[in-house]
Length: 332
Image 1 (cartoon, one colour):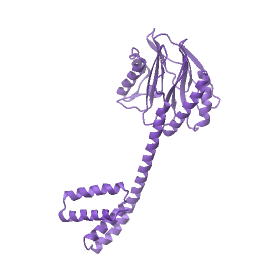
Image 2 (cartoon, one colour):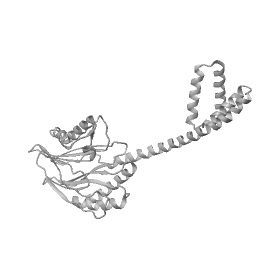
Image 3 (cartoon, one colour):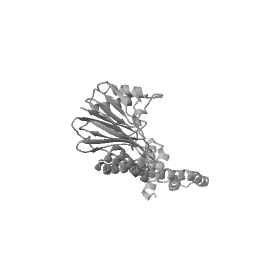
Image 4 (tube, helix red, strand yellow):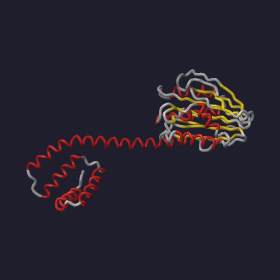
C-alpha cells in the first residue's frame, strides 16, 4: 500500500516534468519506479496513483478520466503476471537457499583431508558440474587397511544430496565391521534399495588396500572399475569387474577382484564425468584418456589428478557437463 508521502512525491515529479520536461524528473521517476517495484506495487495501483496525481494538478477532462477505466482493465492482466513473477521469484529465492544448505551439507559429508599411510601417495579431484553434485567419494581408515570408494548417484539436486548422506552413514557403520568389499556392497545395496526412490540407483566401485601385502581387493556395482598403471611395463590397464548398481534389487551379489601393486604402480578410480568427456563435436576416446594419464605418471598422485583435470577442462573449453571425480593411489 502506498503512503501519502509517496503520492506527494509522485505529484511533485509529475508537476515539475509537465512544467519543464527536464531529464532530472525522468530520472526521479525511474528511481521511484524501482522503489515501487521492490515493494511489489502492482501496475493497477500505479495507474490509480497517476490518476490521483492528475486530479491534484487540476481539473481532468472527462474523456481522460474515462480512459483510465480502459487502461486499468488492460493492465489487470499485467498485474496478474506481475504477481505471478513476484511469487516465482520468491519461490526461486527459497529454493536457492535450500540448495545452498544442501550444498554445504554435501561438502560436510566429504573427507576434510586425505588419509596418510606409509608407502601410499593419494590424490583427489572432485568438482560438481552444478551447485549440487551426484558424485560421492570417501575413505575408511584402519591401521593397515585403507578402503576407498567412488560413487555416482542418479539424478541431481536435493534428492542426490539426501542419498549421499545415507551412503555416508551406512558406509561408516559397515566400515567399522571391517567386511570385505563384496560384503560391504551387498549390505550397502540393501540399505539403498530400502531407502531411496525406486527411480533412483547408485553406481559404485569400492576397494580396500592392504598396506602390508600391497593388494587391492575391490568390487563393482554398475560402475567404471578404473585403471591400474604398471610402472615396470610403463602402461595402463583397464581394471576388470562388474555387478548390478545399488538399489535395483534387494538380492544383488557382487564379485570381489584383487590386484597387487609394485613400487610405482598406480590405481585410478573415477566417475563417468572423467571418461565421458565431449571434446568439440566428439567424445573423448578411452585411448586418448590413457594417453593423457600417461603424460602425468611422473608426478605425485595429487599433481597427477590435478594435471588431468586441467588438461580435460582446457580441451572441453572450460565446460564441465557432468560431475567429475577421480582418486589416484600410488604405491611409493
